[in-house]
Image (tube, rainbow, N blue to C red; front, side):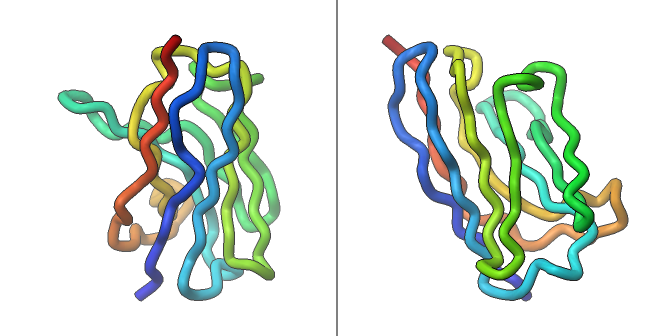
Length: 118
């Protein structure tokens, strides 16, 4: 079972940037798609970005043009570059496989907190 460890979160001012990393304990080459999700208390978990094994990307409308997902299969790591951050981006960010692409979810990691505030 692959274990996922997210890092890179923090406190940033509106308009700022952060780069999140998701390190997997095993190979992610065979995983059809990996994604970044975010969780806000009281709201459903939201998929904000996905990247397929062929490097095709998809984004939620709320982050399109501001976030960029990438993957390094050799390092078993998935990244999320977040620019022009807004207060509404505040959430715990987690990575996992994306079931809609035929991949099974792994056990969720702890996630990394992103807080956008002045």
